Image 1 (spheres, rainbow, N blue to C red):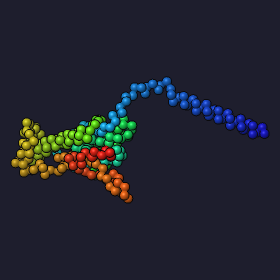
Image 2 (tube, one colour):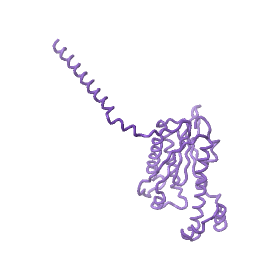
Image 3 (tube, rainbow, N blue to C red):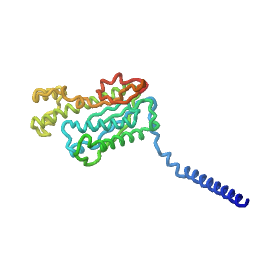
Image 4 (cartoon, rainbow, N blue to C red):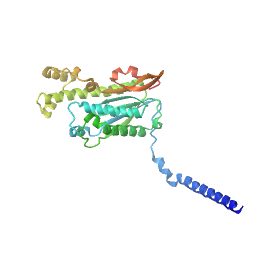
Length: 272
C-alpha cells in the first residue's frame, strides 16, 4: 500500500514538474524580444494579379567570357538556362508560363496562387535559389567536362500585372528586347568573325543603324538572311505546361517550348 502511494505521489510530482517546464517554455516563445517582428515589411502581393518573378544574371558578361561562351549565342548556355527554368516550374507548379532569353528568365504565377501566402520576398528568393542551384546541378549535362569555375549569381524582382493584356504586353516587351539585342549581336559578331573588324570598328559601323540597315549588312555583305536564324536566338524560349490526359483525367504534365505569340489567348482560363 505504501509503495503504491509513493509511486502515485511520484507520478503526480513528475506530471506537475513537466507542466511547470512546459509552462516556462511556452512563456519563452513570447519573450520581450518578440517586438522585433514589427520591423518586418508586409510584402503580400495584391490579390487577383499575375505575379511575375524575373531573374537576371549578375555580371554575366564576365561569366560568359571566363567560361568561353560562343558568340553571339551559345546553345549550351541557352539550353542550361531553359533546363534550370524547367526545374523551377517543376518545383513550383503554380508557375504557368516562363519566358527566357540571354541571361534572364521570367516566371508567371497564376492569379490565384497562394504559394508562400503570396509574399513577394518568399516567391522571389525561392525562384532565384532554385534556378541558381539547378544551373550548377545541370552544368555538366550541357557543358560536359568543361569545369564550372565559380557559381553564377542571379538577381530577382517581382512585378504584378492585373490583366491578361498587361501580362501579354510584358512578355511581348521581353521578346522585343530579345529581338533587338540578338539582331545587334548577330551583326556585330559577324562583322568581327567574318568581316575581320575589331570590336571598336564594329561598334562604329553599327552606330545609328536601324533594324533594316542591320538586316541589309547581313544579307548583302555576308549572304545571311536573319529570318533564317534559330527561333530560339531571335525570339527566346517560352515554356508552358501541356495538358495531357491520363486515365480520363487531364493533368498538366509536360512542357511545350513555343514562341510568345503562339500562346493561345494568353491562356485566360481559371487555371492561369
